[in-house]
Amino acid sequence: MGGIEFEILQYAFMQRALATGVVTALVCGVISCWITHMGWSLMGDAISHAILPGVVLAHIVGIPYVVGALAFALVTVALVGQVKKSRVIKPDTAIGIVFTAFFALGTVLISKVPSQINLSHILFGNLLGVTVADMQQVLFVGMPILAILLLKRRDLTLIAFDSSHAQAMGIPVRFLSGLLLVALALAIIISLQAVGVILSVSLLIVPGATARLISDDMKHMLWISPLVAMISVLAGIVLSYLFDASSGGMIGLVLGVAFGIVYLFGPHGAAWWYRAIAKGGTLLIHPRSRQPDRLRRADCDARLYEPSDARTLHGHLP
Image (cartoon, rainbow, N blue to C red; front, side):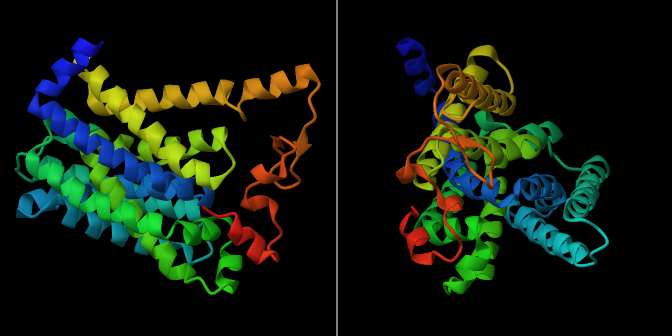
């Protein structure tokens, strides 16, 4: 195995793929912790599909694809919010309407406008074909996002659990929610190189969901989730090289396998339930979540505190 790793690192394209993949995994893994708690998973899916026409137009005009993709991502968020205001259309329906319309527009542009765009690379990624310019673009966009999110992690965690509580404490909820949406859009954009439009949502949902099955503590989730994403990306890159398969598909497959293993055998997975019941262990059923947990006060997460206990809750944030 050591020989294989050394052989892989000899190639410049593999070095670029590994560097780009690691940064993408770190950014998406951190954001995943919050969007899975806030119920924004479908919004991430919508943005990942809706930016397709922006990517195509950016290629046609000759500007960086980040500009076009970000523009359509922000338009998507605005349109979803506008449609939701009607109160007749439910949020998930509004999201579905907007992202399918934009995704259809993107496919039409690709089919009708002459260009050198490879549709499969946009849809499924081409991590092994990342250029130096692409790698630098991911680094320059991804690292500042990661730094800002980590600096604001306490406030974002409080907003994720109880936005009304955060508002009462003087935290700018609307501004930070907007900041997280922009970070989500940029994370999707930089993940296009790794897994493409279709599978980019896997990097934004699966790591956070996997971390949630391992630990209830957000402090732990904020390092478990990026670690799961990074290991999955690295394993997917190596497997795609060894088996000459799609890098994006391999990364998505490894993420799915990792989630399945943790779901079955993790601390809060299905097998843990059966082991605890078989051993006659004492379980605590949370009145809100209806999920079993160990009787340890120190491991309780922010959901177990009453909304009025602001200082206690903020003291347990990461």
